[in-house]
Image 1 (spheres, rainbow, N blue to C red):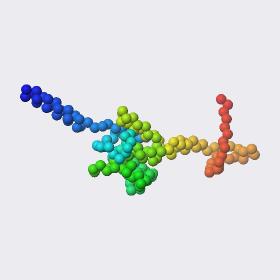
Image 2: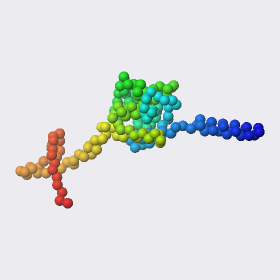
Image 3: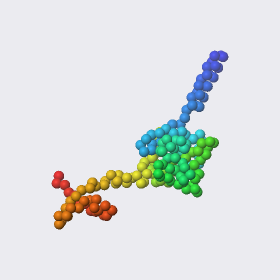
Image 4: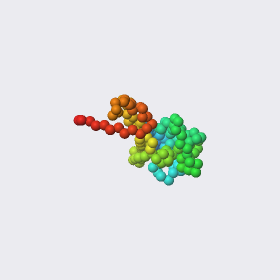
Length: 170
């Protein structure tokens, strides 16, 4: 009987140990890079269960954004947090400050997809990044004669509106 109780106690302790060491796996996909982040121990300030709260350390690891006095910054870009809505973005839980990345995405008009079953959040490109491909469409400089034979280069018209008409025979 004693060995049965000891065996049951050991089994119970092993189960408790497994449950205590298990953490909720949460994944952030930001700029096509996946990062596993910590889960808060308790619910934070948001009503939306799909909101993603991350530690400031995880914010930096997953997105390269950091919290500064002027706002949430990355390189030369800083996005101020509206003072009236500060609690929607930040929550202190003991010695850890949590940041609501979902609320930040809403502020930036950044699309977010959330898969509850996989505990994964995908953050799409921000609004200003949607048209960044236009910079790569700059025409190469070239020279062509006008109707009177005078040579003009495309760079002569920099800063002015130019209509280029092209055609192909294929």
